[in-house]
Length: 428
Ligand SMILES: Cc1ncc(COP(=O)(O)O)c(C=O)c1O
Image 1 (cartoon, rainbow, N blue to C red):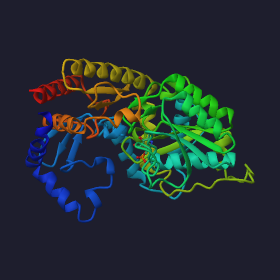
Image 2: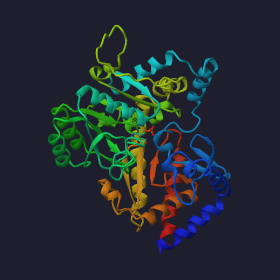
Image 3: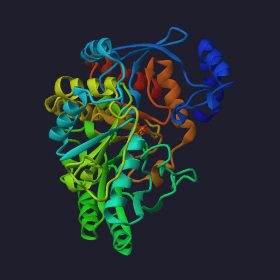
Image 4: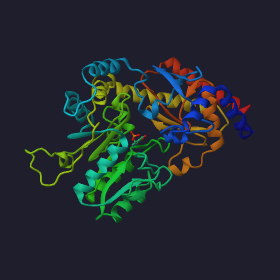
């Protein structure tokens, strides 16, 4: 019954959004698929947004949405955060761009090192680049080539393991281990003990469906990796928002290198990798360091003024350690409220996640592995998405939800009502 309605739901969506459709059709002429972020693709076409304020998005047809996606975690602050806006516009009045050093770069580096327990940090323009550079750092330091990643992991467009290793991935020598399976993962580490340069791990699979790692799993993987001399790279591009010092810290482990991105740039493009001095100091090309072997890492926009300036105010004023702890707890509470709504309905929908990141799944229970995610009822998953959209709630088509700081309790109550109403109408 539920499955019969999807065609009608999609055609209603198309009818309600003629301006978005028109934009999409025109954009396809020059942009393959109509845009440059594959994750945004869904049938019949994605919405086009023309404004955002706080937690409310407005689309090209004039509809308003409570933004529950938070730009896949990059929009943690909500839209047009005033403190970021003010400090960046002031900086822009001085200078947009400089082929030199400016003070905001070292200030952000200090804030990041203090917050996330890093000796040194380097900036990039995206999380993808941060991971590529972290892998390079590990390979150069160890003289080894093999990189262990996890099934279900996502570390960037060319570091894609969500449904197995993608054929378009960067040509590293990857070995893919099972996530949250201690014996299987440790076995692979030990088997590759002489050739393993790095283990790259997300403390929670983000794009892979918000599946948190167990503390035991992370602990065993980190111990085994360190035992064989491999560099542990924690990909906290999404999860550094959790707790005061990021999610790996909450799980009781420490990486050699951590990668960052998303919200730290306050809405501007951002990436960073940082960690132990002896690894990062390979980038110290200064004459006084006098290193024989160095890694060169130039990048026109690595220290761009807008991202560096925004990052400084994000970490020092907007998303302080205290705010991060409160936001993580708020997310946990909200996920429990979502669970309570889901438990009142017959349809098989579950929620997974940690803190302010979560994912709705058309499954009887929250998934424990990427294989569970693959068993979702694809039609029900789409109906859930369109049901929420119709009720003014914007989430990812794949079910991801990320709480921003600007969401009020009233917004969250409306979202729970919209979810309840969507499920009730699908069941009738
Ligand atoms: C865990 C993780 N690592 C890396 C990336 C890549 O970051 P970016 O999109 O900034 O390249 C993402 C993006 O979603 C991510 O979720």
